Length: 626
Image (cartoon, one colour):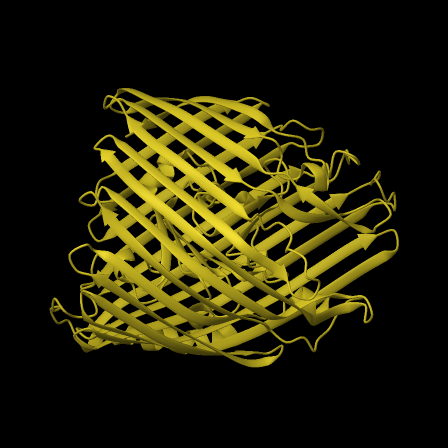
């Protein structure tokens, strides 16, 4: 109820704002922004003018990757490591700059979607079907978004219409009885832009009890209600059903995991005056996860096990950008959230339940100073107040300088971040610790980008370091979660973009995670490979034939696994190479024939979990555009 009490007056104030002025917008006003590429930085800016370390993957680039999920796209982004615990349908996590998987904040259209129960986001079911672009902002971003943004932010922006009516229908079939089908359409009629998509994916996978199905759909719309007021709406729903065979040594024959996710976001963007740009967003989401583990349950054989977690996330976010003078912008933000969560576990020992809610509110500010095209400096601060532990303050600053002539871009950033203890950390029966304090981080980076050969080649590199304190971990002496861990990460992330010819594009990224150390044990953090990289080639020859190929390399990483006697043992995941290639032939303007191969050499978790190599998956299909 607290979220609604705050959201209603915010909405009333916001909708009254456009009545102040129906004035023409001046070219230098806050509403007259340059081409928008990044919205996750709050004050929207182009990639070239922002101090932040940013990667934006456009819709065109997503299609060239022939990616099915957002996780597939993120594997090509510098500084990002994607962890797959087995076959399609298994848990998929993201580690940004060596931070924990729960230290990356995931947004859809600017609203957080991390699970309220454990603070993490599982990318396994998130497809790219209705995605317009993916924005990745690396480094601590809690000053802009609050909790969970210690390592960075990933913002998935969906479609809301197109200038011309468009539509796509695609069907693919593959090995292991795999089927992928999707359809989408978008159009703009007068002041109304609309888009819709529906998708279905099903595969038997290679292992017993490995079948995986995910389906869903989304709709988006935008309405130009007034000259200076635009209202947008997005709604999505996804369901998935996956077998959970465990590792190959235990091979559970009948466990299943079922997920449901629903997200609705309403936002309004207004320009009440030439010097005032305002945006209000209201969001409501629900995650429901059910695990059904009937006997037998090797290696424990403890009888049937059923769990269900239902997490809601209600949010209201108001951002105001004031153009104080040319080159001077001030952002003032207010936000509030409420996350009621219910957990139930049924075993042969009885029933365990948890029903808790955490509410929060925040006040944030950011000042951008850009006296010329060569220089941008930002400074920000934020105070968050949580019902679970109290208040926490964060701050960050950054600077970007472009050397005129060669076009060299220099960047530097320093910021703090935090992660609030989750409902699971605070209240889980048998391990609850309501006295937990937030995890904290301090991170900085310096980098440069350099265009070469008249802009046909762009190269970039950034060195980063992060220090994490007060991390929450299991304490054997107290038999509960405690703020006892510390960690440190450092590394180099590089990329290049090369367009040697009009019909040829080559992109590459490499990350060296030099340090990923648990400062308490002195050991390397698990699932943090020292070396990761990718290479993507897009070639069109002639206009109706298109070749796309992507190679991803992941080096060795430390890990641990639970043995049959419940002890934890160290393990090493061998490195692997994943190579995907696709050929698209368009004999007619509206019809394309598709042939693809996905090739996984070696296995990411061969030693830790015994997952076998997935081998090759061949796909063939067709798409129709209208």
